[in-house]
Amino acid sequence: MSFIIAIDGPAGSGKTTTAKRVAEILKVIYLDTGAMYRAVGLYVLSKIGETLDEDKIKPLLNEIEIRFENVSGERRILLNGRDISDEIRNETISQMASKVSTLKSVRDFLVDEQRRISKNTSLVAEGRDIGTVVFPHAQLKFYMDCTIDERAKRRSLEYSEKKIQTDISDIKRQIAERDERDKSRAHAPLKMADDAILIDTTSMSKEEQIQFVVAKAQKLKDCI
Image (tube, rainbow, N blue to C red; front, side, top):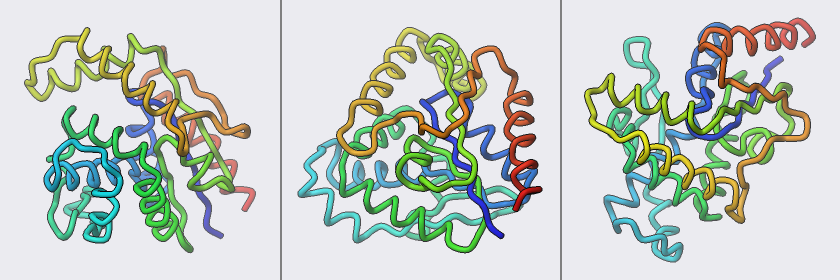
């Protein structure tokens, strides 16, 4: 029997790293919904710039095809056949993804895509409305959270490893702005599902986060 593990939380809380590794350990699909929003954000930005005019954005959704492929053991995302996995991993696209995610048409489009991918398969999905909207009947739900200072520190370290110069105060401001957008949007705001397990990752290592989720998931697998 297939199962779904939903992991939600704000940017920098550790959900992406955890979800990806848990999926590898369990040998199931990893669904990176954030990458899907980034793909839409990239496409909109390339076509009409930073405008959030939904009347202009909605027709563009019919032109978008998003696929995930495994290339040399690595999960890659393709937008209309083009690998954009690296292109979408910057702050400009991150902010654009957050902006387009406030639009109902975009959310409806991607929720349909995410549910299509999940049919008859087991997966670990992470995002901001996975346990509340996309897969409300997921067998196991987690909500990962972390202090904003620690999240800014982690993001700064990521940029440093990529040799990207950053100011941690700017990163903290951008995270705070994104949190506000995600939590206050009218459609599918970021919030913890009533039946989700809260994980405060502030003082946890990556391995501790992963093992916590894996232990719960193994119990789930034993029951189905």
